[in-house]
Length: 257
View 1: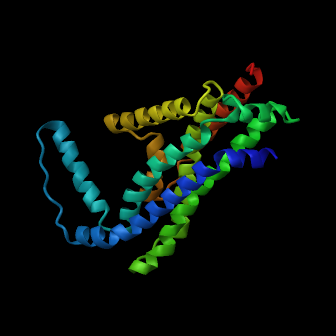
View 2 (view 1 turned 120 degrees about the vertical axis):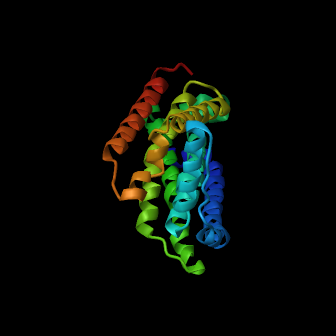
View 3 (view 1 turned 90 degrees about the vertical axis):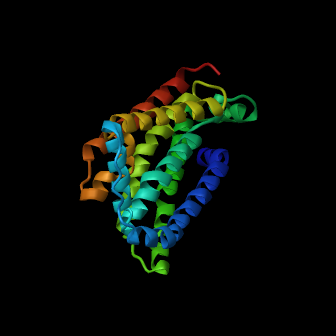
């Protein structure tokens, strides 16, 4: 009953996210037919800029062009480093937002009337959301190796699974943050907005400082470039997710509904 109720609460968010991500993954494969052929024949321009910032921008553009000359580089740049990362983060926040415990009306009364503890209810809610997030992170990415032979290319299923797993582990933190905020605010939009603002701030901070962070880890750049697995970053992400879920459970346990 708990799992089914949680599924009913989030099913449309999950299904819309799944359709959008699947469409975007298929679009990445189709886009390579035109853009990939163009990039493979395009000479890398010598881009010069004034000052340190201009030189850095020029180097970044040149590197991006070189990276996307190969199919593997194109897929990582367009899908795993961009579309999947940002859409995955958004839907992680959306799935975590708007728990019935945080609202009024029939959903709240139904939840509180169940003969189970609040901790068990929240556990089912979190488990359902994380399972949906795992599907969103991995399954659409598998469309890329499935469709690649249709355009005469190959992409490893193993690479798709690894990249999807990276995204799931890191995006689970944003899901847990939204779930925690949903135990504080009585609507869907504030937890979603605040979580997205946190994600946006972290992303802009990485870009400004040109430093590796959560979004670098989420895109599995280290794995793409060198095949290495940053276990420390993954363990820290898991620990932060667990801490946020614990805080959410504690908030629900002491809240007076």
